[in-house]
Amino acid sequence: MATGNRRLLPGFHLSLGYSVLYLSVLVLIPLAACLAKAAALSPSQFMAAVWTERARAAYSLTFGVSFAAALINVLLGGLIAWVLVRYEFPGKRLFDSLVDLPFALPTAVAGLVYSNLYVSNGWLGRFLVPLGIEGAYTRLAIVLVLTFIGLPFVVRTVQPVLETLDADVEEAAALLGANRWQIFVRVLLPSLYPAFLTGFALSFARALGEYGSVVFVSGNMPFKTEIAPVLIVQRLEEFSYSEATAIAVVLLLISFALLVAVNLLERWSKSHEA
Amino acid sequence: MKPESIRLAAPARLQRRSEDPWFVKWTLILLAVTVMGLLVIVPVANVFYHALAGGLGTYWRSLVLDSDTRHSILLTLTVAPIAVAANVIFGVAAAWAIARFRFPGRTILTTLIDLPFSVSPVVVGLMFILIFGLQGTLGPWLREHGIKIVFALPGLILVTCFVTLPFVARELIPLMEAVGADEEIAALSLGANGWQMFWRITLPNIKWGMLYGVILCNARAMGEFGAVYVISGHIAGQTDTMPLRVEKLFQEYNLPGSFAVASVLTLLALVTLVVKLFLERQSRRQREEATESTDLAETSNRIDSTTYCQTTLEKQP
Image (cartoon, rainbow over all chains, first blue to last red; front, side, top):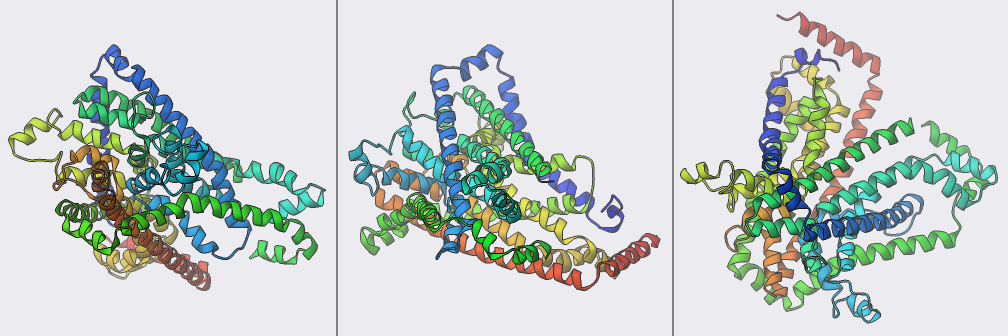
């Protein structure tokens, strides 16, 4: 399929022109407006907006809970992917399609239910709160709901890789005298590594920007359970647009860095396979 | 074919060796099912339990007789289809450009399409406020001309389009690349014009993949919260969509009402999953049929006919 297609197939200019126009109006111009607004601030103003004590608390909380949730997702997602690929059991197909539910369920619903499940008279809080596990309006609550939101990412990146792994390699390792655990650690894990990393990065990135579910469960107390997106909304409601924009730019830069990282990871894992 | 035949030929003893002992297997399955149960199934059950706890009468009343809730349902049913339609048109155009042609900046365009996924929804709302808001670049001009975008329907549509932009395009680009241009070139060489080719060849070929993108796009459009929260101003009865209504009722301690709206959204998510499953099966079947037919038709034959078409087309003035 060379450039010669342009002579054979119609609509090159129309389709490309429309795509670029649509992307510019909807994505590029708003992004540029956001960056321009932040650039209009002097460096000291910018720092004053993004480096207040409250903002720092919000960043470290956002990072901490997102990291924790992504890490939990790697463990749970790895387990679920393994079970889905390696074993047969009744109800497996239903189980498989339920993994995607967090993608399909509106985040507000997730937030509402999770805030309700872990309070002291909720379905799960009833058992957990007497044990001292407070899963509502705490940091743990944020981690829990972010784990729900990010669960499909790791499963759906690890599952296809696990499926394509050759049984031959494991059999060879077994023939050479490796036990199951050695095979898992030395043979399987190295080939699953890139997929796990990609899944981790995707679920981490999703968690960083998440708003809808967290506002319900966190209680949004400054310095304690206030995440960065909530802080942006706070600043907006106070009509301090510049400060909101400055914090937004910090979030934007972090998520772009993650996007680049995910792309590099995917390229790396592809070259790894080849 | 090859790897399967090798695996079949492997002796039974070896096969068993690479399988886990039964207690490992069932412990892991039990663990996975428990995790899914606690994280996913219990919450879904909880939504319906609380929505219906007051009986069907209360459920009906809080959904239909509350005028603000009714308005939020209508608003969601207005915003989502418009956003989906806009992104379908964009998705088809972008996929046609990217999958059928090579041009400078093609990789950048593909990356840009993914960009909305990595922007926090709250930041999306903020960006549009910075342009269309009263203090924004276009704000004063819009006010002079009496056009309302922020805190109104156009704003809701814009942010929803942004947030759901990648879904259809991401589905269509690899699909169109896999289907290839042979049939389209053949149609053109037989005298079809561009639109005839599009409606009769291209669209039927990408139909299932497109619907798949539409269903994901729609689920996200109806469920979007953060971006809509910021741009809408959260005005009950005016700019509250269903997810925003869930939050408003939650803040007002009207849990039955909140869960009633949430249950409708959950039902939507479940329907999305079922339709998605169906579409995955359809598109797999379509792809298998496509590869089978190419296998049957002998690839060399196909290349001959394409080059023939190309040469005849190139000869035309």
